[in-house]
Length: 81
Image (cartoon, rainbow, N blue to C red):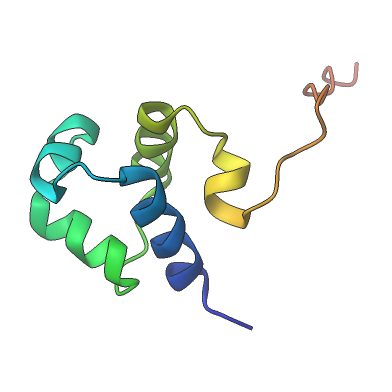
């Protein structure tokens, strides 16, 4: 099975599209060097960074991390009393 870093790297490269690494890194609050490491699969970003990437690309965090979407009507369960 492919490492998580490599899986995320493929999806980040795909969603960046034709934008430069420098422009995309700035949009998500990273340095170009860090984005380069993420896209090479040599660095697993923090959750907050993954959230920023997902928001900028308008994709779900589930898809970014797993390649799969969550259930369409998924909602957090209310806390138990």
